Length: 218
Image (cartoon, rainbow, N blue to C red; front, side, top):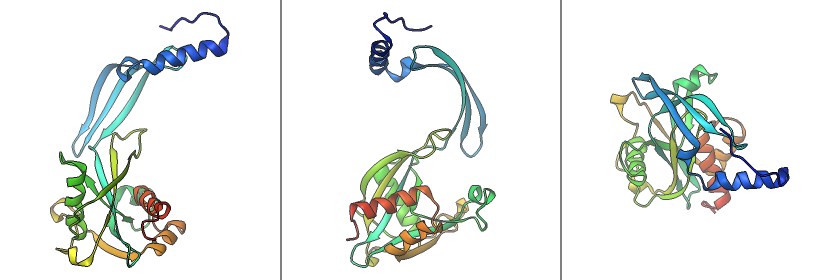
């Protein structure tokens, strides 16, 4: 099925169709035909067949796989006085099988929401992974990290830390297989590590560049 347009010239036709699509809700442009669960072990992998209304007004049947692991939050811990940041280093098997020799990634503290609000999640994860108890994390933006296949939306935070806020050693949850090293380093060095390819985690790079452009450690 296609939308009809009067022959006012191709440019006007495109404008009229664009206006129609703009006022349509997302559900009106997507008609789900079937959903198949391919895996429901650690998280949920689904194959969905749906009809999608294209920009030219025609419908097209598509099939996509989506991996649903829930939403998450990430925080960059920074100390303005010392111009330092706290990151973590841990083994990531997917990175290991895709060419990272030791599989160890330097990352900002992060975790899944697990039904918590993003603020509560990131406070929980900061204490669990780094040992720091943060009181007022500031949400700076949100992003879909791999929208071609993964449903996850990530909430990005920054929070200032002081050493007297550290209530534990961190290290993560042993029962979940976490073996996390807490790393404090100079902010300038962290930026240099990004440039040299030593920090390769996307969410961490995004937060470090945010801190640089926002002047958080000036």
